[in-house]
Image (cartoon, rainbow, N blue to C red):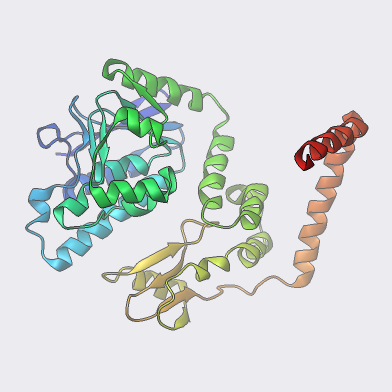
Length: 356
């Protein structure tokens, strides 16, 4: 029996956490079923995914405390890794995802909702990260995603106080995009999903990847990600991929915790290190299927060494020349239609206003 139902509906689909008697709480079986359900989504047909809980009381009430209290230290670490891996898989899912939150979204439930692209909720919804009140910390990415969504100050307040918030406050702080009566929630989710599904699917997927990957790097690297559209690069000889790796990924290493020496290892060795208990790993923002670095607390940082030589300067110059040629073609199209005198006049007027 699976605790997660996959229900296609035209070119959109539902993933339903179906453990209603336990308020859809997450245990290791539910996480495994959610992982399998994501694998089952037909990406050639489905353009948007709606995640919801079964019944009217709860989206997901949190991790299953009944299971957690029986876990050994090693089992608890494995459970935490399983949850984090599934949340990250959902977050990086190729098509847009909407969390339709009806009722409780606490702890792991709030973390599940935050792993979706955006959230809408019923007027009965309740959100929170109550872990500190139980003597633990959020374990499925709550400290990180909540701060990114509502700002560090509000995230810290919610986590430190373990206080739950209702739908109106969740909307006020930007945790959800809209609030509906419970009776209208899923129809509203389907309408949004239909609007997304009605747009060009490749463009929507590329936009999602550009936003997600760009948020992990500085703006200079982010605009490279947007401009090159990594997933669709025509790259028969690997030159463009090597170029992008060279100019965009070095900054990731600076984000690793400053503890221990740095060692360069092969991709295979890095994956083995990532599987060790307690390992903290960093994805390559340009190529999400690749692990870029692993940190073993108290030991060392391991970074992926180059699998292929970095590009020759001639390759770089060639790619930049191609980009310049494309830019010149674009200018030739739009320049005749731009009133530059008016543009400069408006810019001058605004500058004078700003300067007083």
